Image 1 (cartoon, protein in one colour):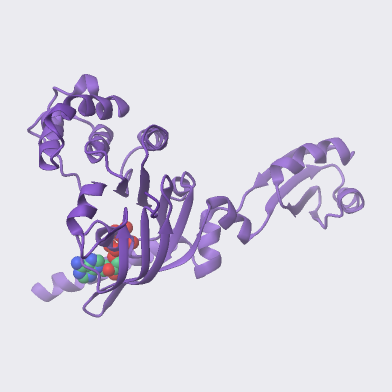
Image 2 (image 1 turned 90 degrees about the horizontal axis):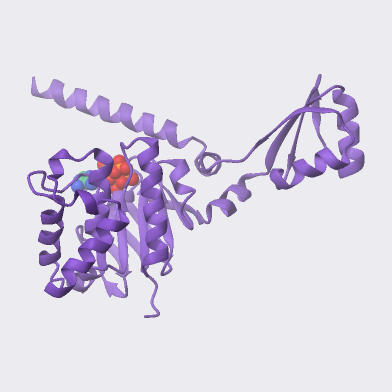
Length: 328
Ligand SMILES: Nc1ncnc2c1ncn2[C@@H]1O[C@H](COP(=O)(O)OP(=O)(O)OP(=O)(O)O)[C@@H](O)[C@H]1O
């Protein structure tokens, strides 16, 4: 198989006047963990729905595992696993029953179901809980079970829409370990959406979406490097002397405000040891601040993802209030 895991050109979706997705060109390579990062309403879920054949595009083309999402829907569906924001497990059934039901639905050969079931349940640490009803599971356990279910039929591409939304930090981090393990253990591409900056950092590459468009696409490191350098702040006994020493020894232009000196370098982590060994300065403290993915988003849009979200929430609340008012 030589085709990319996902390939789109000019992929578009309009809902009436709303241009939810405005012409997306994208290639996701096999074996990648690829992330869509963007605020609510950016068009992430709509794009994923089109790739999963759940929503028909208004225009453009998309292929998943080499199959066209409109003309070869069934082939696409056999090639993918899905984990959506809204849970779809049956709480009255045991974990195992939920998975067996899914395996039958997807036509996993009977002889393969047992070993495959154990494989995926082991991977997410739920093999021992297989006989328990899902209703007794915590939010994190349910999400892990959903991921296991998405993998049961050995998909080529696993789509995860906000896989860790609403979960506590510890569970989020354990879900990320599973995702990374998965990449090692199975020949699979993972395509996910998130609006958590720290999560996007785990991806091999990310596309930042806003207003239905991809506004930037690269590795997290390259995106951040494009924004600017690391910012180093030191506290020393004599600010002006430190500024002069930094210029003389490293050619760095720093600014001092009393005993606090601030400057920028390409790679802060590499520079700090040099700073201590070569500057000859009496340094009391040092801190390094990296450009974040939020800085990247801000550099392209002029606002932060969090601000965009709260603006969206405010609009949503206003619309809801208007709708309620209208009904009265
Ligand atoms: N079924 C629909 N009918 C009308 N408009 C829709 C529909 N689905 C999505 N939209 C609109 O399309 C735009 C993109 O929504 P989408 O859900 O894809 O964004 P998102 O980035 O996934 O955000 P979220 O993280 O909140 O799901 C929004 O303006 C949304 O209101």
